Length: 120
Image 1 (cartoon, rainbow, N blue to C red):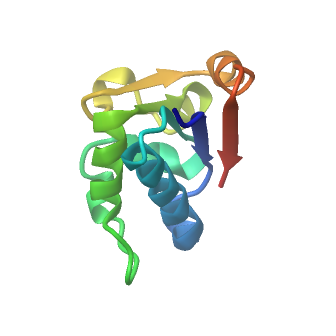
Image 2 (cartoon, one colour; image 1 turned 120 degrees about the horizontal axis):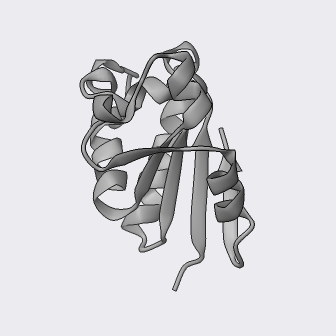
């Protein structure tokens, strides 16, 4: 069984290629059977809100909304507590299947045995 993967994306549309790469890697890992946890931090926190991923566009890239759907269906997606609060996002604002959690939960996930963590 593949090891677990935690992907933290720290950017949004202002760094579209890096942002899309994080979602692509997370979705590819889900497709390969890995246990995946995707963390939306910084400007990426907005993608936890319905409609925001659908607005994202990058030439020659799989639509962000499609990648996010793959991860939601086969993994776990979390929006950073502080990042959400700074943007006025609350749990009720999120897409179905997403949660809000903080640094303690992120740290617990990345320190677990056999976990690979990537930050974009």
